[in-house]
Length: 514
Image 1 (cartoon, one colour):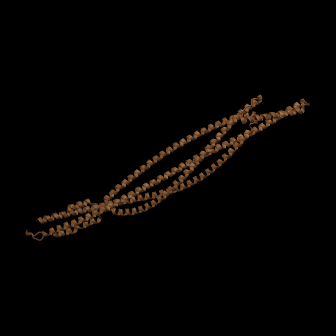
Image 2 (tube, one colour):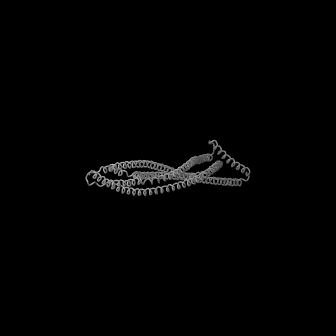
């Protein structure tokens, strides 16, 4: 029985201090009984019948005491195992809670990063739209300047035509006066005839021009001068129509560009509305997460209380403590895995940054292409200006025929310019609205960033608290090691006492055999 008790004590490091003290305090009456039972042997050599009965009674009492002690030890072991199982359950629940909390916090971080990326993309879109608007404004300003220059040139051409008409009239008058001086007798008849001839010639020329512009037919029976005049007027009319068609095509292209810009603005407004809805949903999710954080804080406080109770019980349970150390090492490995996953995410973000840089380079290439196209357009404008100069030379010869057509064209151009100015005012109004919406979005984004920074501060506080708890756990481990050393010392003293009791039993058996 003593060997069995020693084996039980060696195999059960989970026993409490009270059980060890009870075990150490119980052998004293046994010693007293054994010392009392050791009576001197009689000298006569015939043993008395009384003394041999005492060792039997003592052995039975000793066996019953050891059985009761073993029962107590077994009960204590069962209680310790039950407590260990309960502790394992609580620690598993705590680890599950922390894992869930980490997952939720990682989701919140991912949503925050997505929101930041969306805001950055919106900023880039707004910048591109503003650049396009400035480019269109410049193009419109250039078109307006060109139209003003054309109007000035038309006015100059009209003035030159009027001056030429006046010079021709003065020449005709001088010729008529000379003829009158040469033939004074036929003065009134010749003056009237010459004036009538000049008027008839001018009227015939205007009629020919009107018929040519309306019916586009040539008269067969005309003088050589009138035929050359009609051919030149048809050539100038064809060139002028071609220029007008080119101007109309440019204006139509501007109108298509403006409609495309309007469509882009509508799409950007829709995107901004969707982003507002997303921001509202994100704010709601953040509020939910704040509520969950408060709940997790309450649970964390409860876990702290449970942990204090656990630390009290750690003085008794060594094997559970070793299991907990293994679990803590696993948690550390999990944290290392989480850090590695964060590093992978950083690598992915860097790859995305490189991709965005490539896209930016592509956009710069597009911009350079647009600049080359702009240079080509400027060259074409120079060519057109050269053609205008050629046309001016042609118009200098025959300016009388183009006055009415230029007036009508100038009026149409003025009407189109008025419409363009209206459209430009509408675009400015829409741009102001978009600027206000952008400012509101920026204010909302700053508010969300502040709230996220507050959450990060709370998380840092929680991490500091976890580190403090780890330090307390290390202190508890040290205390447990000290208690274990004391238990070993007590076990050694108990082994020595058991050896002494065994020696006494051997001596008693030796005496009984005598």
